[in-house]
Amino acid sequence: MYLRRTQRKRSDGSIVGYLQLAHNERVDGVTRANVLVNLGREDELDLDGLKRLAGSIARYAGADGALEGVGEGFVVSDSRPLGGVWLLDGLWRALGVARALQSVAGPRRFTTDVERVLFALVANRCLEPSSKLAAAEWATQDAHIPGLQHMDDDQAYRAMDLLVEADTQGKVQEAVFFATADLLNLEVDLLFFDTTSTYFERDTPDEPGENDAPAFRAYGHSKDSRPDLPQVVIGLAVTREGIPVRVWVWPGNTNDMSVVQEVKDDLRDWRLGRVVTVVDRGFSSEENLKYLTRAGGHWIAGERMRNGSAKAQEALSRQGRYREVQDNLRVKEVLVGHGDGARRYVVCHNPAEAERDKLLRDQTIARLEAELQQIKTARAKSKNAKDDAAHHRAECALRDHPSLGRYLRQTKTGRLLIDRKKITAEERLDGKYLLSTSDPDLSAEDIALGYKSLLEAERGFRDMKSTLELRPVFHRLEHRIRAHVLICWLALLLIRIAERQTDHTWRRIALELQRLHLVTLSGPDGVVEQTTPPTPLAAQILTATQVKAPPRITAITPS
Image (cartoon, rainbow, N blue to C red; front, side, top):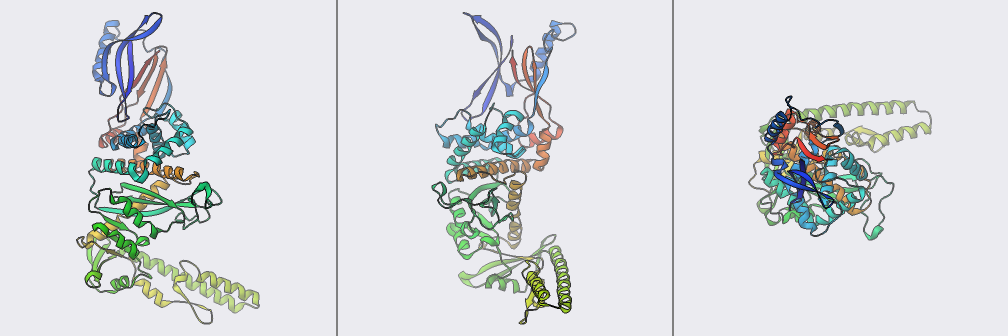
């Protein structure tokens, strides 16, 4: 007689285990399991009741309270971290990612459950980022993925291809985000959008016409400071809490100004309600801002203070009293223009940042004065044309320097002087940034604080590139690149939800939960899989995320 475990796959793709009390019977030379008692679902078992039953059997079987011959010879044959995967799987199921994929994939089937393989790739990004080949080995040998016994890199690539196919027009992302909004009770009133780039480890970009498609990996303005490598441009929209809403991928030579209209159109059918889109000054062209106001939309945009529009310069020059919003933030509202052509501006001032700007500028001017004096002294001592040419090159390098050259002017004779007018103009901008908005109802305080939340989009990019190791990318095909970015987006979504519900960083969450292991005991009587007890903090994290802790006994397989 033994405990028999079976499992069934439900319509939503989840795996449910059941325990039965059975014994084997030999019928016509074939051994068959005869079920005596159905104990029910293993995640709903009364473990304390089973322990009491085992204790009563033990007391009856021997005076010392132990079952003779049972449990002898068991050794630990395997031990794998379980807590991190268990938490991510609980959030994954709560978001309905499996349902979204199954609804789009339809009748397509593979030898391995595609949804489980995709989850394994996402969990790998969150816990131990690696290549697809290494991720397949990790999921098979080093981690316990519920419902997945084995996977290889070919299955990983098939699952990635299906993910991109299913996400046509962002259908998977839409379903997942609205499940997130329901789970967290999100109110999407401000939507923050920004872009970044990520590079590829190769020497040349794709040639036009390669694989019968336009070049996708291309040279462009690199935000990773790697202009020597081809890249793609990635766009990310997040809520004010930092929850990612949607991700886009464009060719590497895409200009920021050209993507805002596509972002607006893609989110138009998501039924987000009244949304104010927040963009940085790299996206705030007049054409883009007009497009964002279509269908009743509104925007908050950063404005260029140097070489900006005439209206922006007028807003900066207007006199007015600042209002305190919070520590180190003051605002004043300025209305420029009349009638339909009027625009609301908010001038923001940070006194602490103003002091830092002044200190940095003073250090720059001191360095400039020293450099110019050194050139002047060396020129006075020069004795030939070769020395004069060297001094001229030094002046050109100083003039073209990205931070030093802005404070210099060149005389008619070619000599460099410090431009005091530029210094005075910069002093007026110390600690300031300028915003504009089309929304007539938002207060100046809400506009300023809302724009500061744009940092959440930048934090998302930082986590994608560092914690999730989005880069460097080695994929060559466009749909594989898109799939790689989508997997990183799903991983970012899961860790943001975990952080928001627990008030801990993902590093702290993962470190604590990975101390919860799944231990496999093997012996002459069979195999037992048992989990170690969670630490108090791990238990708190699971409770906060509403993920049920794993059962102490996950499987019993008699020999």
